Every structure is written in structure tokens, then in C-alpha cells.
Image 1: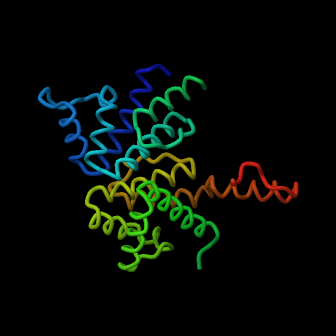
Image 2: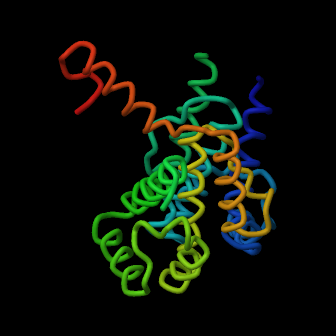
Image 3: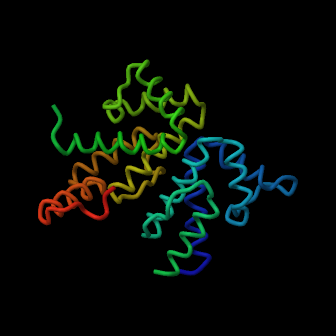
Length: 102
Length: 134
């Protein structure tokens, strides 16, 4: 699996998780991340910002949203999930390194 | 009266729900259980009243409350090694119904139960504590 395929799995997991919270959730976050440049399509390029946005918007619930994303991605990649923490970008990196190690 | 498999699913859903609440802290967890109990939903009713639980959590926490339900579903799928695929259903409670039906039909066993059985078997056989337990 190459980097683009991996990113696409994370992107789909993120989109699915955010969409399942409510139909406006994903487009709102995409707009927020894009600012004046308009909605961002690729969430993976903004993982660091997304971490902060989720924490700000959902408070204590943001951790659950991040965990669901990682659990979905792990299942898709057929990998054991990494230890579930509070940083989405960190967990994605853990998953990436587990995939490359495997 | 529930069959052992059904009981196991109920226990697993309760376990997953508890794990999700734990990530939000002890006070939030206690308050959520108290709130659900005041509304007539006990810990053993979580699966059978899943839709009510979703509505109650949304009424208590707003849209964020739905993430607890999604988290519970995701943990359940992780326990049974099945895909979450929320898009397969029009609502979270329907997805839960599909998943539980699937689990019962395929006679799937959750990871935590398999680990318990392995641990007991190891300890019965060797007469010593399994190193992977606390």
C-alpha cells in the first residue's frame, strides 16, 4: 500500500465519522479549516489543525470522535489499532508506522 | 430470560459504552449513568433501549452525545472484529440492530471474552496466574 492509499483510508474514515455526527458537521469543519480560501477537500493535510478544531468544537467528545476514526481506519487497513490517545495526528502516525513495519 | 449469546452481546455493549464514557472522565461517566437511570434506563438495558439512549444523550449533551453512541458501536465492532460501516444504515440504532443480528447469526465471540477464557484455561492448566493479567 502506498502513501496515497493510506491517506485515502484515513480521509474516508474521518469523513464517515464526522458525517455520522450530523449532516452539517463535515462541511462546517471543512469550511472552518479552509478559512477564506474556501472549504478544504483533503483533511489529511490539516490533521494538526483538525486536532485543535475537534477539541475546540466537541470538548470531551473529541477524543471519542478521534478514536472512532482510528478504529474504522484500523479495521479497513486490517491492523490492530494503536493505543488510543488524545491526538489524532499522533495516532495516524502510529498507524502509518505499524503498516510500514508490517 | 436471555440465551448465553444474547447475554454476552448485552454485556459487551455495556462494556463498550462504559469504555467510551471512561474516556470523558469519571464525573461525566457517573453523571451520564445517573441521568440514564433517572430516565428509567439501567445499565443492563443499553442494548434493548439503544434508540432511547441515543435520544437521551443528545438531549443531555447536544450533538456531541451522538459521538458516545458512535463510539460504542465502533468499540463493539472492534470487539467482534467486524466493520463499522455506518453508511449501511439510516440510523445508529438500526445499525446496532443489524450488527447484533449479524453477531448472533455468525455466532461471533468478543475479544474480551476470548481473552477471559484463554486466561482461565491457562491458569487451570498451569496452576499459576497468567502473566498478561493484572
